[in-house]
Length: 251
Image (tube, rainbow, N blue to C red):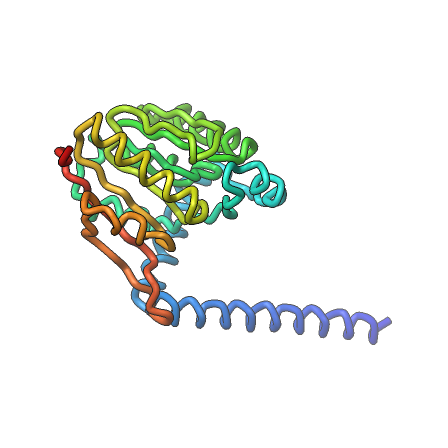
């Protein structure tokens, strides 16, 4: 009996050691990837806002289990798994635009469960709009936005389910957020939709593109001026790109 207890305790300690070892290895990779300062700021900021939203009963969960089915339903068969942006990167990106939070009307294309939408509501944006192909994600995002409203947020919000290839950008949008939500073909269509929107609305617009794999599609148009780019610490790949478009485009 004592031997069994001893073996059980040993196994528990060994499992804890393995978990700690894996966690340290993960932290090391993240530090190499992001740089030590960015890593520390990201972790502290993430924990701070996680606690804030936990108190508001906002829950993001995970809706990626049916990803292949969702991808197959997309027009260009190039949708990607929803990825969660860090609060530090989101807030940094908003700050780079220089806009007053109360003036921001944001569209999140590939909004997932609404993390960026809810953060915009927490910061008292004028309006937030989410688009996602995944119906279960949009339902979760809408529920989370309603929780934010119940907890005192006055930000206008709406969430739509559909394919980004055919979406229309709402009037008065001045900030678009993307986290590598789909492939090259769909992104090319989104860029054209943005240009069409700008020609009819003639408003200054910022595009925040996290993990900008297809940023060349924006750079191919002189209308999009890159004002910010953050590279990772190891692979020297862009982790965030922000573009600004003037209110008046050439015809």
